[in-house]
Length: 401
Image (tube, rainbow, N blue to C red; front, side):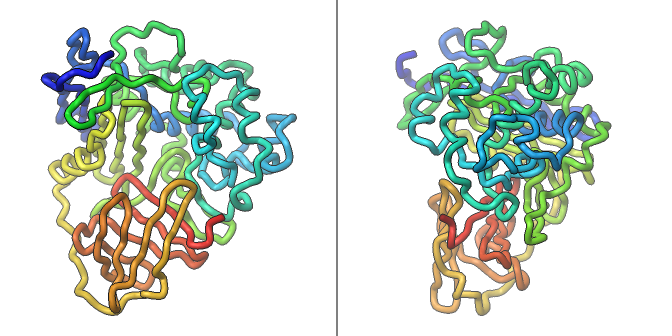
């Protein structure tokens, strides 16, 4: 599609669910700008990394979490062979992130065999000893799809259909297929300098169990109901634990945290012009779902605005300025992002995502952003930090390799 003036725009499908009832629903923009097809509750969107919660449900139902990759994939080489299924689920495996391998990214739009994908990373050294750190990994979830196929003898897509889609009544949800014609599917778009362009879709063979499922807003509402009664729902809100004994802020396909004192389980996703975010507040029996086809749409702010409206929780109090642990100043990295703590006299600022924020001390292990008290920074004894945004987290280390 040639660039066009944005007289019409891509958009979003949004639902807020309380106690099993949809109390707010809004669909805006176009699923396909060329055909001027409006977004509707039955528009089919990529679920991107929300796929990970589906994968985790199937794994928990079928697989011993403390067995190793080698137990299911007999030819998997030594560097990651002893990584456990639990470590894959909780992003603590140390297996390199495939999307950061330049040769892999260049070929992500091409259809690959499983053997071809494996060849990009299986012989690489681990980023850290398994279980010792948290580092978000699409590779780990892609491998879980391969393990599901080895255990069931069927495709990953069929396994999800059997254990989630059909029991939940999600009739319009499916696995992405590079060659399939999928009715009512939204096309992805990017907007830059006022110009809209259509995006190319990454191959399903590359995203796999990390991000290749498709679904509709209506079906995601059904998924929300399915999760409430699922035997593994509580486990899905249990954080992973490192070998040091520290709990992470991620567990079984969900980012875990609290918003203004209320626990949540959430996951966002982004895939080639598509964005999505699903946030659940179990104690409040409230869920918010956003699916969109506009790269760069402010999904976090949109969902935060809805959470503020429908939860009505008071804004946290910012502590007064005081002495700060300036010895922590430095750059903290994961495999592709960096957070900077900078000493300013006896204070600290956080620089992350192109924003500089002054910090205040909340307690011995927690700092809070003075300009946005919903953002917190947790200090870890292993030398790492976690920047905890609502529905998103960054964990980095000063001594990362």
